[in-house]
Amino acid sequence: MLELISDLSPHARVVTAVLPFVLAIVLRVVLGRNRMTRTLLSASTIWFLVNVLLAPYSARMQQELQNMEHLIR
Image (tube, rainbow, N blue to C red):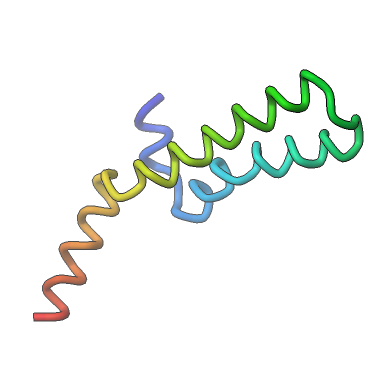
């Protein structure tokens, strides 16, 4: 499973972080404010934040940051 995630392109990673949040908002607009949509919106917000906060710790991102340091020097 981790290999599948690590093989995703940066654009696909963004989609996997944003799509659940957007779907939760659409469901909230369509279905109204209820317990299910509040829960989905809360869970998708947490999912988005975890993805954004953990992105700098991925191996690919660390390599890109190191490459940028070498370009600056």
